Length: 264
Length: 299
Ligand SMILES: Nc1ncnc2c1ncn2[C@@H]1O[C@H](COP(=O)(O)OP(=O)(O)OP(=O)(O)O)[C@@H](O)[C@H]1O
Ligand SMILES: [Mg+2]
Image 1: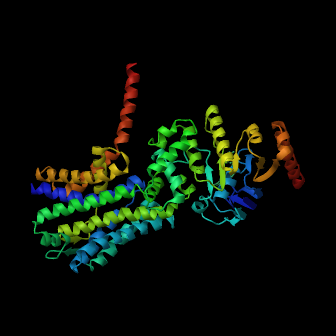
Image 2: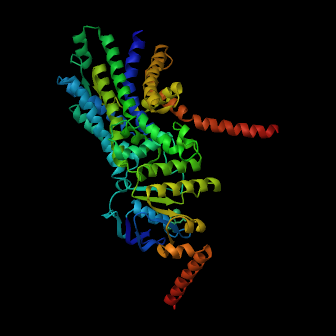
Image 3: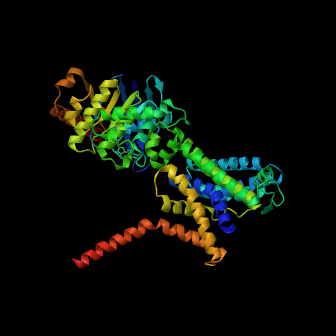
């Protein structure tokens, strides 16, 4: 479904702050896979998502989505097939517009001409029915401005917006990070449910290792813009958090040794 | 009485301009200074077409002129990455020359004795000049209000609102932000230029400096309207811009009639009204601080 080949991105090139954020990264995501993405702060996880979404153009490499080379396609065109939930609940919704207006924005862009009514009554019924599945009472607050909702409620709205028109690829960037544990669990449960029901190809960034191993079908770990771990199937099922940590420190030691060799 | 009727007519015609300002300042959330130029652009185009015997076509051309002006500003902003305020100033400044060119190099154009839309309707209906002016002002303002209220309920209208509300979100969704801005600025300046076009035919003359300070007048109208109707959605906002414009003209009529201040003070008064209205949050903030400090002293 998604194929990333030798993706390279250096920020602030030719300055003292030069930073290699993606280092020849390659990744092959099959249709229907649910990949959890681990990695320390600054490993390049969000940068990978940004590259896939077209927030910036990579310095090298290729991005292929569903057989189509999208490396140089502009952001809003790719957005038609990619759903994305940001780490920051403020980013995914328009605060001064109501819940139904936000949902309609996401819903109608695929099916409607620019001069058709944004919200019809049957749309409203549809919004109510999908929101009611979350059991958060949002279905009765369609006319509430999204800016008045809590972070968790906003993430649920964003998640709904991203998935109500089934995307080819769903990207979740620590979308439960800003939420309290109970709400985070709930949103995670909803996420799992949506992904399963629509058989969505998904990448989810998380810092929760237990969650990373138990959710989805495959786990990768990024470090310094490279994939240093990629496990799936039985190997992944056997893995514990300690194994992951062990693997991480081994890789770190290895690269440290390599550096030493270079310096000597 | 004629003074009040006259103010109503002016308020409605300038109200169309106020809707344009409302769209750029309140909906797109971008201060667009193109207004000063596009108002005169519409005025000049409408005047020159009227002089040549095509008053109705003149209004349509004024709308097109406004769309062009708005799109130039949008182009400078989105494609050339020029700061929004500067982009507006550049267009406005360039339009000064264009407007003089449209008016054949003279800074003043008289439409006395020409067939304006007002004269045309007057001849057709047999009503007196003043009634025709009132009726046409009401009809044109009403048409604009209705079209815009409907427009902002469409998919495209909602995209324009979303761009003004959370641009980051919009660019991450599948909406073309740049194109939306072109359309938004086009509509905003089309209204402003149409207002200019109507004013030219209403007054019976076009002056190259008619657009000076028009932005502040428009902002004052928007703010006065919000005092009456509050900030409650786009439909109310569009109506309140027109209402604010009418009230603004009434205030001016009252002030000039009671010799409260001489006419040349108008721009200063408008600027002060706008500055005060925009300062309300700051004033509230200082009051709050004083209350907290005062409370400490008493404790
Ligand atoms: N636009 C940018 N300009 C310059 N540097 C950037 C930019 N975006 C990211 N970086 C740098 O790239 C590196 C990777 O950042 P990224 O946001 O991908 O980290 P992350 O893995 O998502 O971390 P976190 O877990 O903290 O979200 C960081 O060192 C960051 O400073
Ligand atoms: Mg990140």
